[in-house]
Amino acid sequence: MEPIQSPGGSIQILDYHNFPVSKTVVTALVEVESGGIREIHWHTNADESQYYISGEARRTVFMPSPKARTFNYRAGDVGYVPAGGFHYIQNTGKEKLK
Image 1 (tube, rainbow, N blue to C red):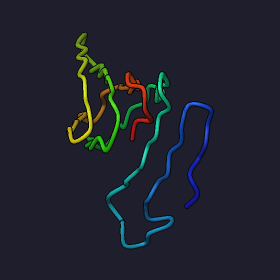
Image 2 (cartoon, rainbow, N blue to C red):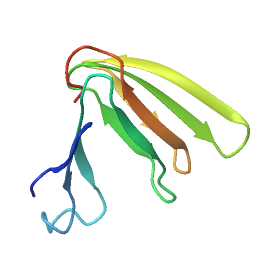
Image 3 (tube, rainbow, N blue to C red):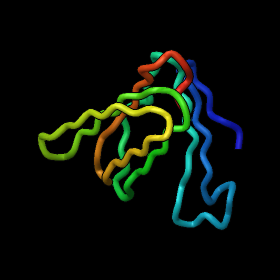
Image 4 (spheres, rainbow, N blue to C red):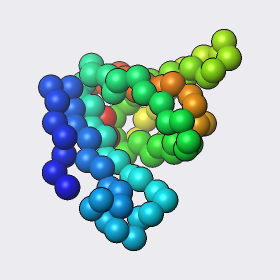
């Protein structure tokens, strides 16, 4: 599948639509330009795991109760967002975040 492009980056999704054996898992390659932000979003029925390939990031997670946590990441780090957690990712480095 071709990446979905925007001025701040791109996303390429691998799921059952383009990889039929993937019935329960969705994978995405997200790229965020320096200074860009991946918009706030959430997943109502699934946790999210992240692996940072390159760049530097700051991610904030807002849980349904009055809790918010912010974490910093760089290449090689792993992140986790529980189902229902509103979250966004900001590129805080000088290179493209993957």
